[in-house]
Amino acid sequence: MSRQRLAVGTFGEIGYLPAAGGRSVARARYRGWDGRTRLVQATGETRRAAERALKAKLADRSLFQPSSSRLTADSPFPDLVAYWLEDLDLEDRLSKRTRQLYEQNMQRLVVPAFSNLTLREVGVARCDNFLKQLARQSYSRAKQARVVLRLALGLAVRHEVLPRNPIDHVSRLHRPASTPNALTPAEVNAIRAAIAFWEAGRSPSGPRPDGQLGAIVEVMLGTSARIGEVLAIRRRDVDITAAPPSIRIAGTIVSHRGEPTVRQDHPKTAKSRRTVAIPSFAAEAVRRRLVQVKDPSLDALLFCSREGTPLTTNNVRRQLRHVMDLAGITGVTPHMFRRTVATAINAVAGVDLAAELLGHTDPKITIQHYIRRNEMVNPATAEMLERAFARDA
Image (tube, rainbow, N blue to C red; front, side, top):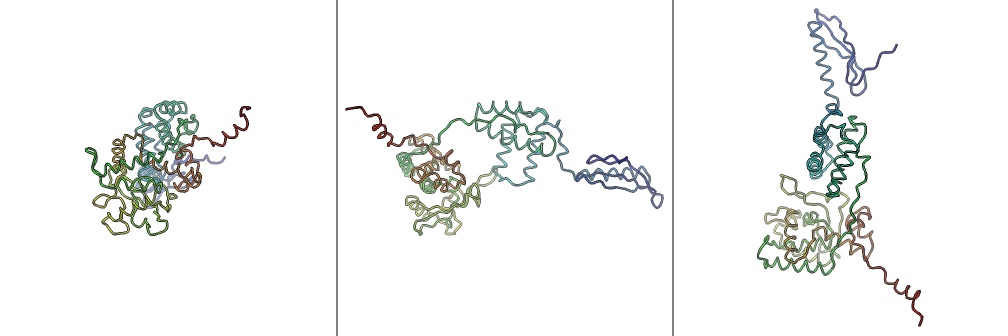
């Protein structure tokens, strides 16, 4: 009869052999995490001492097993959260901002609903109901909660704590119908006038103007760049002597919790790096800023504080909100200028060029999130219908 195979992480019967000087050897076969069975032994003054030494050695070997062994289906859900966050840090693939966002969404949206449950109690029905209830409040929150739940429970499946990921079987979340909004040329000019009024010091309240918001808006309109990408433009990224002048989008501004705001040496994604030819209104704004920037180095930021440090996107958003309040315009964010540019380019040259300008690899993203639908049907239909159904004279 063949010997029964040991389970991973266990040892078989302990045997003893005499050793020199009256000492004793205790040994046993041990099956490690890699599936291989090895003979492990230890020596002691007596059999009992040898056995204790052997068991200590075997216990040390178990430390080399993956730490998922500390989790079981009966572990509390917060234990999985802690382990999942440790695993994210171990992989070290996420940006610091994304890692913080995942933890924030897990602790704020998910943990309050699951903190008193064990892992085996987190089933499809419970997850499905949780996401539907959350979606009634906010589609965005439900989507964010689903992402972190899928990742954490997926880790439990990979480490053989759970047999399946409940999130793989929940109902689809349905995004509320919405249409991307964009500014009209008249609205753009109204915003320009409001910024000029504020920067001229005519507003008795609100943040003090530093003379940069108008140029920031012109560069956003001239490049389609995100606000963080515009604030990360350096002298070396600008070429106003070329025909046409251009700006290279090669970084973004990031603000991590508890840390100074810094320039990151790539945009939102590495594929978003691009060089954009700019129109005359953006080129003129850049020329004025280059004269005002005191630091002559190539790495000097085009938009910065008095000390030359990066501006925060939140500060620029605050300034823009104040100006919009002065103008009586609502709903305008820095991202609105990006959608406005995409809509304008699509109307003249089509979605492929709009997607290229925005740095999108898939035009579907541009269509779904950035281009305002033109509600005007081709007026040629009026002439066709006239020919088809005109009244008899």
